[in-house]
Image: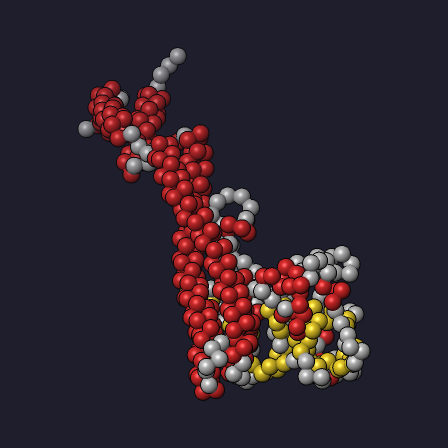
Length: 439
């Protein structure tokens, strides 16, 4: 086989360029990474991409946890302030229950109670940046507002634990009224006060609701009723905030409603709704939760949500039980009811129902605060776990992609020597060109 000088030159240059290419690839690793393209190491590059995706997800979860922790710390601080204010509210209500107070004293206490509720509303309107903490997913809308004018709101009786246990017994149909916590107050034309269980329509005398039930050995409230309104629906007469509706379609609607009962002595009396003029707190948020996911998998509302809503904080009352969603201001409006009763100098009411309302409100907010604290602990635990995972992922990325400096230095010296030798040899063995001969 004849070997021409052109072929020899071509082969030499091909080998020389191959050596330089390997040298150039090794030089790329001087930035600390041995993976710059899939062809460098197909298996290693696949692992590298997977680790990088895991790292991005981990960093997003860590960011979620950081944001969630900040959110819950601020929310918790606001709720702590509210619980402190409720303790003060209870103390002031207890002070109002003192029969030695004159009218001026009661008016002054009512002003303090009103300022207390207004401060609670301000705390519940707390923001982080432009986001309101307690507005649900409508977090750019201020959640709580107080009406400028007083409105006629239906009067209620908040039952204590013993009363709840009795009146939550089975009704005529054997069904348990497990949410029976309040009754609707009715005024009789005979001057007496009556109460209605709005779930059953049963009407009782004030004496039985306050004291008479204690003498009953069986949980059978309907046996002591003095009347019943079949199919009674609170929303026919009151809006969700308890404000009475104006009569529009007949004598059984709103302010025109009345009901005649026959008392045990055989006499009859007409009953109408009892109302009190008070300020109304309204809720402009919703009952939806904000999720900040902290791990792979589906969203777990019990642990992945960071907010509590107005419904969580304020519970429900007789006017929005069973409604979805509830108003979100039941507790606050009950507190405003207390303000109105103290302003009316009803110290007897303050000592009984006023104290019960204050205790119930405090317990409701504590429940919401405890719920948030449990979730906050879950996020704190997740933060430590994510930090450990991030360290592990970073180590995996380093192992699969980082340059072995000692190995790189050796290989660079090796290829540099080969390349230099190739140049030296080539200058001696390659055939000269025509120009070389002419020179």
